[in-house]
Image (cartoon, rainbow, N blue to C red; front, side, top):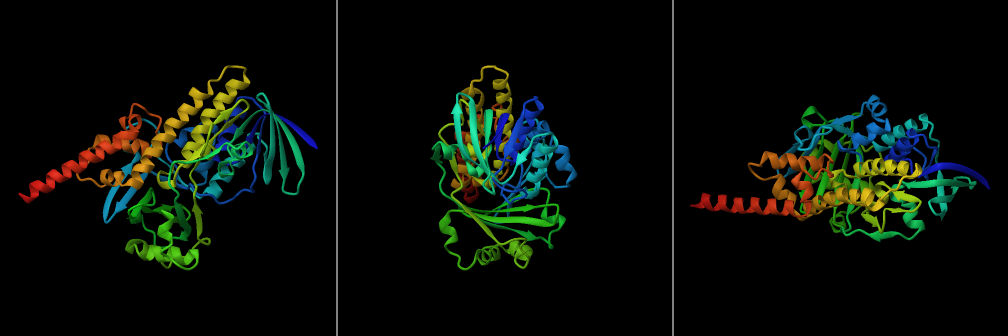
Length: 418
């Protein structure tokens, strides 16, 4: 069997894997990526957040992405029963990037993978990791390509950015269920010939369809728009026929969407995803670290996936570099606790979204602009800024704010009746 030796083996060529590989490679270490699929390949997570731009910049990817002319994104628009709540990243509380992109992920991920190869990091596509044996922090991974050729890769450390593949958690029985309820998504890409500037392509639109059910509308610069319904699986049982027929019937129930998309051609057959939330019992071991969706994937509502993927990989890469230089690394405090700060903040907002707490806040009359800017920072991905009260107190801050708004609404309603 063929044997290769590297300093770091990276599993997965998505944003998590390529960001980590680039940063470690720039530090002078020998890195190799193995990727189970052939790129380009479809994946969701098409609306990025400004915080991920910091990781993409350090990895050296921003210029290449910018050259492709993707749709720039400057905020998020929430709609419910005709009411609109806009969040513009330029107004956020936390200093940082005020824009990002909306991207077809197949093309975006391929750009990152191509760029990391140009930097000298080899990427082996259609190659699966079938076994890993650890000897302290050193490891021997057995990988197999699409025609069955096996190779053993000796590495000083492994970064697992395999996303939904969850390679190390599956190999070592580390998976555990998320505390988030099961949800389902039905979605497609539409050739959006009726789009106009009035449709605000420069930000994602999230529409509250009914309690617990929401719609994403993500315009791309190529004239395609991604559209999907998300919610409890029971909602989808009300619709019959093929996935295409179900999605079109759902669209027909929203007058604005029906006018714009009901007769629009689909770029591909409607896809469905279900039960995506997952986590693992630990994020690291003596010879490995997990990044991106391998650690935990929450929900698509606040587009947190790519941000958590790139920031976790950015953070992990620097710790791996320390480790390879022979320095001590406190993985629990320097990695797990840091990442869980971001994950738990997003989790609180996801739960508040489905519970209706954020409905009360987003669509309140006479919003406090300072508070809105603090919440905007979370929606921009700055979930590690504990100077922001709505990050530091994410678990209770939203509920307290919603209660205050509800009390104010009752007082206002009572006064109007007098």
